[in-house]
Each structure stands twice: as structure tokens, then as C-alpha cells.
Image (cartoon, rainbow, N blue to C red; front, side):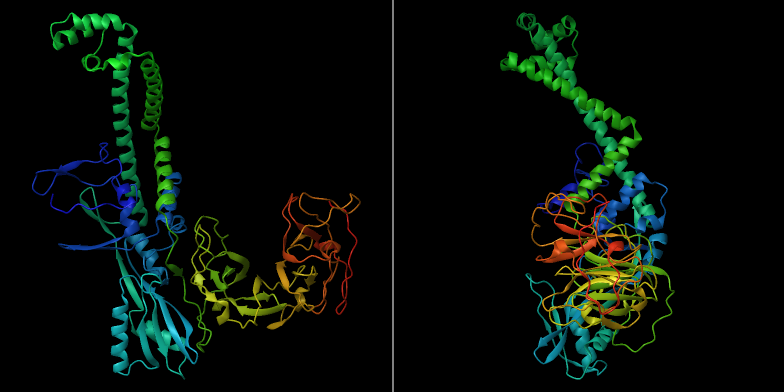
Length: 633
């Protein structure tokens, strides 16, 4: 062989799976001594997932890597909807997924590349501002653009500093290792804003770079420039051909084996005569011909009987052969069905792709941003962004972002590890939202200041969002709980506290930039916030410990793990901001962990239910009295 042998990784084995089952054509290698496959069976769409770069005579190619799970989702969508367009595919593949992570800012070039096969996009390093020493701030870079190393960045920064084109940097350290990964620390001199310096680094160094997509690939030996849909169609056509040829190969093999088993069972039915025929024959050729004539067997069956060992003459061996015969017939029927039914063939390909994604899929590493957002410390005038409907998101790790459309968010398997969207509100790109904290504060934010993430069929990825610490100041122990759309009319906002207080806030007073929406006792805090739609929702307080058993009476009902009473705000104007709220009787003596909408048909679980429309009306400055239980219904 020309090359040294090496052990292949599991994913590489999947690329060559079934290569020995006549799934692809072979041709002579470079010296015509051996045969090599013209193409691999490729259970993994390697060209688009791993990408490639190369140059030849008169042509070149440069394909960006993509996420395997997203590509498989798009392929399965195409199998079920062959007429889908580019917009439908980009819901599953919103953009490349680079192995080095980082961010992709601006997706216009990506769409051009997916449509025409050529386009460019900007890659940006992932960096954050930290305190590198007790008295000095620094910029910590944890991810770089694809193809950019730390040495290249350090060399460029040194050249800029020596040429006095970049100021404010006191030192730069490469702390990258195998355990913690990439970590490039840039110390900032006192008197310089790290955020402004970071923008200069993006502008002047390889911390922001471009990638040019040129999707040129060989299709049936001819170079073609392919868009995203054409690229996926070519791969699916290849997989259909591979599965069809593999099914035909396996069907032929099983048919050959069934033919031999049928002949052996015929011989076992009259084994004494078979032995007599063999013993009285002069040689093996004569025995073969006599078996073929006496028992009406084929040459292959006669040869197999002549080679049979004496131990196969037992009764147990006959039972095994009959079972094998039944299994072979069933498997041949299944393979015949695949070869005869195009829909069943597509289903097999779809199921195999799903198994590939489950086995080898990894979470997305690169964050896609329609825009980089507005820097909080910048005095620049915001761009004239259209006031289109969108969603604003808050994640459990304190990241904020907005979508580019008002389409419902996806619910696939693409959620980032250890992060989840805890609040999502419908708003507009130039609107305002409110952040409610555990101390009962409501802080207004501009939606335009939030980074925009593209629409996706999977769960939104907020890793490119802006941290809460950059847009508002939280006190020690204070947490951001939820977002509010700041409705100007309707039932308003509902809040629940740890000590069981439930309050509804008048939408007319949600106009200040920052204020206290609920008065809390010492040791109490807000645990749940909900925007009300009708004012007749049933809210559920989640309790820390089980409620004692209740007698069945009007207004009370016992559940498997707790109980649910119904009570809530008034038929009329809600309370003002300084009202402390009302405590459900079932919440006394218990710590409440959260407030949420009660799902239809909810019965089990430890919680306290409160229909909003039954909360009594109280004026500002009054505490709400505890209410007696009311009947469910």
C-alpha cells in the first residue's frame, strides 16, 4: 500500500460502513495493482459537516464546516418535504458551525452562499472583560475565528503596539493548555476602557476575520458550484443509491443461503437414501449428479450436502435449520419491500441519518448573530432598525438576546448544555421590555441593545447574548427572574413571593424606567413573575413541603401530593405598586418556590392554585387579607 495503516475513529468507520456489500463502484488505484472505491458509502454527510479547502487547475473550493445534528435535521426535512425551499432549510441550518467556536456576525453573506454557492461571512472571537488583577481589568479571549491561532493574534498586537497604532495594552499572556482550552489574557492599562479596546482589537487584529465560501464539488466526475439545497440533494441521491444496492446485495446473499438450507432440509427428510446414494457412487462427481437427479437438487445444493459434517444429521440441527429458513424468508420479504417501495427506502435512509446524529452529534459551538447589538458604553446613535415584531429571551445563566422574527421559537434538541430559556416575551425591535428581579424591582431595557439571533427550528442558542451585568446592576443576592412586555392595557402583571404573597400590578403604572413593584418583608423575595393575558388564568404556587391532608369540603380538594385552591385578583382595577399583596391560606407556613400558569387538567404535584379573577380588589397602600378557599371549577 502507498500509505501507512492507521486505526480509524468511529465516525470514520461510519464513512466506510457497508463498503464490502457492493454499495459503491471500484476502480484501479494509481498503479493498477489494487482496486479503490470511486466514492465512500458515507453514512455521514462529510463534505458539508467537516468542510474542505483545496485548489486545482483552474478551480478552487472552500466549504465551511457545519453541525452534524442540524444537517441531519435538514436532510430528514427534505426527505419528507422534497419541494422545500432555502428558507425552510435554513430553519435547521442557520449557518456554519466552526470547530473553534467563536461568533459569526451578520448572516447576509451566508444566505448568498447557500443560494448561489459563493459568499462571505465575518467570524469574531469570543472575549469578555474580567479583573485579571485586583487593580487592573483585562480582556480574556476563549475562542478565536476558524483558522486563527493565538500566535498570529499575539504577533499582530505586538506590531500594532510598537507602531503606536494600538494603545492601552500593558501585557499579553497565552495561558492555553489542554485542560482549560484556549485562554488569551490581554491586560489593559488603567485609564482605558476595556470595551473600547476590544472593539479596536476586532477591527485591527485577526480576532475578527472573514471566511469566503466557494462550494465547488465533483458530481459524477464533473465540477459544479452547488448551493445548500443542491448539496443536500446530491448527498440524499447518493444515500438512496447506497441503500438500494446494499439491500439488493443482502437480498441476494440471503436468497443463496435459503437455497442451501432448503436443499439440506430435503436431504434430512430421507437421509438414509442420501447416504446410500453417496456410498454407492464411484466418486464425488458421480454422487453429485445422482443427488441432483434423485432428489431434484441444484449443483450448489448437492455440493453443500457432500461437504456436510456428520454432526449436522442430528434432530436438533434440523430444528435449527427450520428456524433459520423461517428467518431468512422473513428478511427476504423485508428487503424486497424496501426495493419495491420508494417511500420505504426513504424511511430507511431517514432512520439511519437519525441514528448517525444520535451517535456522533455534538452541540453547536459557533454562535450566530444577525447583529452584534449596541455597545452599552458607546455613545453612537443606534442604526435605524425596522420596528419589526420579535421575541426577547432571558436564559438561566443571565444572557439576553432577541430574535429577528416573531415566529414561535423552536423546540428541538439543540439546547445548549447547562442553559435554558427561562423567559420569552413578544415585543418589537425598537420597543422596550422590563426585567423583574427577586428584590421586587422592575428595570426597563431597550430591545435594540440586545444582540439578534437568527430563527431556528431548534431551541434558541443564547450563548451570543449580552450578560445581564452589562445592562443593569444587581445587588448581592439579587436575581433576574423574568421579562415583561410592559403591557399598556389588560390585566397587567402577576407576582408571587417566597412567603406566598400574590400580587397583580396595574399596567398603567409600568411606565417608569426603574422602580419597586412590590413591597417585601424581611426575608421575603419574589420567586415568580407572569404577564397575564386575560386576567382569568389559574396561577400555581409551587410549595417546598407537602401540605397536610384536608377534609373534603366546599372550596377544598385533596390531590396526590398537595392541594389546589382557587383565588386571585379582583373584577376591576389591580393594585398599585406599594401594595404588599395577599397570601393564600394554603401557603402559610410554607416556602413557595415559584409561580406559573396552571396547565389544563393539572392534578398531581405540590402547589397552590389561584384563579386571578378571584383576587379581591384593594386600593394602594393596603395589605391583602387571606381568603377562604373557594370551590374548583
